[in-house]
Each structure stands twice: as C-alpha cells, then as structure tokens.
Length: 181
Length: 191
Image (cartoon, rainbow over the protein chains, first blue to last red):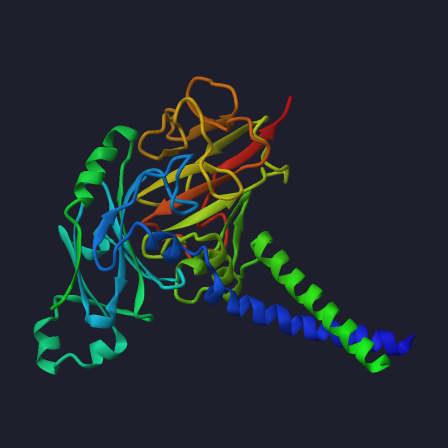
C-alpha cells in the first residue's frame, strides 16, 4: 500500500513538472496563434486592411468592432522596417506584437504628438550596427526594438459610431510599412 | 515487473495530472496580476512584455492579440455584481460611470470571443455614441428583447461576456481599487 502511495506521489511531482513544461512550450507549438492565422491573408512586410469583425467572420477572436484595423506581418531578416501612419481624426494607435503575440510596445496618436506616426523597427543587432552619427541625426526618429525577428504590427483607427467607420478605414488606407533598402 | 508497473503508473499519473492542470489553467484564464473591481477583471500585465507564462500560453492557444498597455486596458465581466453568471435570456443592466479615459467601448462576445449575430447589427457601444442622462451617467440594457435607449442584444445565447475597454487611460498596472477606477455596476434580473 505504502509502495503505491509513493508511486502516486512520484507521479504527482512529475505531473507538476509536466504542467510547467507544457505551459512554457505551448506558445512554440500553437498552430492557431494570431501570427499563423494572419499568415494566409497578410503578406510579409506590407500593410493590409483586416476585414471588419462580424459574427460570421473574424480573423482573430476578441477584436474590438469599433475599430478599423490594418496589419503588417513583418520579418526583419533582410533589414529594418519603416512604419508611417497618418493619424485619423478620432484616435489612432500602433501596437507591436512578437511572433508569439506578446504586446511589447504600443503607442497612440497623442503620445506620438504629431500628425504622422513615424517609427523604425529593428532587431537589437540591427540597432547595434547603426553608425553612431546616424543615431544622433536620427534623434527625432523613434526606434523600436523587436525582441523577435518576425511579428505583427496592428494599426487601429477608432470609429466613434458605425457611420464613421468608413472614415476610419480611409484614414488607415495610407498607412505603410516598408523594408528599408 | 513490480517496478515496471510502478513506473508506468507514475508516468500515467504525471501525464494526466500535468496536462489536466494545464488544460484547467488555460481554460479558466488563470493569469497573474488581475485587478478585480466589482464584476470586472483586467490583466494589465498581459498587454506588456512582462506577460506571465500562463497568459502567454493562453493567447497562443486562442489566437487573441491582447490590447497593448500603451493603447488601453480591457476589463472582462462574465457575472454580475452578485456573482450570477451572465445569461442571454435575462436582462442585465450596466449603469454608472467609468474610469478616466479618452474614450471607452463595451462589447458583447460569446465565450470564444466571437460577436453574436443580431438583427440590429449591434455588437457594442462606444462612449461617444451612447445616450446619457442629464448627470452624465449612462445605462445600457443587455437582453434578448429590443427596447428603447442603449440596448445591447444578446441573441438569446445562454453564456456570454462583456468587455469594457478603456483607451488612452491612466488605469493600468498601478491601479488597485475602485477609487482609481470606478467601474459601472452590473445587475442581472431573470424572469
């Protein structure tokens, strides 16, 4: 009897390790994460509008239907990215996500403080490789470091009421994400 | 032989217990750093790079992109102030005021994060389109039957959740109590 209780205890301890391991490994094995879902509709390093969320069709769960959204699926392997987002009248925000959907940086129009949000996105290595003087002249250019070489940028414009959604969508149509080259 | 059976037994227990615990943790949404105010709960850390491993696994599984902390914060309600589960066949009233924010939206989803089909094509309200009382307070009625004022249809589904998102707001990781963030009251009545 005691022998079985010990085997059980061992099993439970091992189970704790299995639990922690599976939680830590799950993001790497997920087949339905946001990046994978968007891979079909969003080409690499270009800004595309996301279809409005409806009950029949939503690319991602829990999207706010009061927003027009564009997405840029980025890959920094061939160099940094430049992002240009003219702000809409109501509210515009830019959110950066890693390959696994971690929101590592987000900024809105007020925090950016200008009519066009302009950002450079690069990996830590690419930033380190920037020439010194360039970093000085680029003082007014906002540089964002991406923890992973690939990821997602979500640009969102607020439509305060359904009638203003077309305007929000139009405001996003001139948003760009481009590889520097 | 006894040893082998013992090992197999241990491994079986480990797999069942470990994976069961993971499944349980992810479906119940156990992330750390929750702020609960009335019926509403938010996980502001989930919108930052300091997201905990449970929330990380949970978003990888659901495909959700959490709202970034520089953008806003999302509060979720699955029950009313008295702890009764929100039921689409009952009438739920949201009333009162909201924390300081440039604007907010409230949206109704099923438990998987999908919008609910309805004839009015109404999935939520924004703070700018809502009809308010003279004192600035508001009331939103959530239910299956159409009514005047701010009506949010449930389509009659049995379980749903409400998400109140505050944008450009001081509410976040440092928020602790209802004093910093007065959330609207949620009360359900079933007939």
